[in-house]
Image (tube, rainbow, N blue to C red):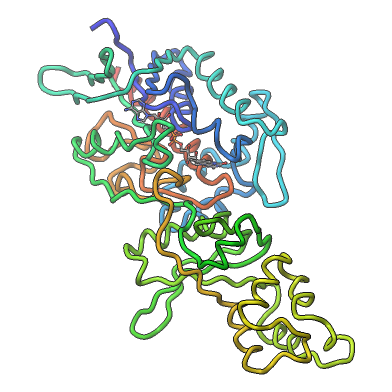
Length: 422
Ligand SMILES: Cc1cc2nc3c(=O)[nH]c(=O)nc-3n(C[C@H](O)[C@H](O)[C@H](O)COP(=O)(O)OP(=O)(O)OC[C@H]3O[C@@H](n4cnc5c(N)ncnc54)[C@H](O)[C@@H]3O)c2cc1C
């Protein structure tokens, strides 16, 4: 076969670009195969085309944010924490800035600069990029052949080591259609059922949906379920929320979406909105029962607009028959309003699914992958990194950070394993 390389990387996203660049560091021949006509398509559209590359925290902060998947990420993140990601981009002439939320973006606010820098780094190190070819099948080494054979829809490549960084199933328009799961299953890996995460929620009611476009800048969304007659909290996120025609978007809704899709059925969960997390229930009651001359004369809408957007305050007042002054508010309405402001059921019936999910939860079972090297514990010579693994983090740069750290670890280890065996 004329197309022979020492290492083959499948998928030129965040993880694949890092894996290929690291693998090629010491003159090792690397081919990076991408089905799109260009590399890093998802990087280009990420963070509203600004690309939130990481979060302003340390490796421990990232590990914590990933919850159960965090422990697996510890070794690769420890070796390549957010500080080093920022240093890498500085070195690649992409200076970064930290925003108030802790999100790290390129100073230019242009995702294309991130993609171009990662691509240039890989090409400068000699990586051969092959675009517009979708990998269809992979033959593992056997008694006859010591090399892997990667078959695309156009040609075949022989490689000594293989790194799979083909991503998940979210935003399939970016090329991520879950192809890797099939190959990896065939190589003996368990695939934890992929499901959408960081995805807008479908639901609401007529009056909520009529508020499409309204943003609550500071609210708290919780997902609860009932177990043995007790309410159990599955997920909670305090951030901003966007009301849409069909439901809810923004970090507060999207960050709890994974807990909902994990629960399997939407019927067993309730999604509750606290529109005023900055005050507790006692303080809220105090405001609603204010009978002082000045406080009592205030309209309920005016009182609520100190915490809520005016359109939402108006709707709460209308829906709950509270279009009156604070002093006129009947006790029973006061109690209903407190309930509505602190724990409004959002009537969520589903999610926008993989087409609109920012990440895929589920994927390759983590117990079957070495967390230091990303080498498969099922098939030697196979390395797996990025979103194809069963890891998914919250909004805020965590997912790129995980893709960079695991991709880098896979590239280094695949190259090292070649030199050991020479
Ligand atoms: C709209 C949107 C915005 C986002 N914004 C952010 C953000 O700002 N910050 C953040 O941290 N995360 C963000 N994410 C999540 C982040 O993009 C992913 O977690 C990250 O891209 C995963 O990197 P990866 O390299 O594992 O996979 P991907 O980036 O998905 O790359 C996988 C690549 O493999 C290729 N591929 C798949 N199958 C084949 C095949 N058969 N043959 C050849 N190539 C194949 C795909 O075309 C793709 O290019 C966002 C996601 C979306 C959808």
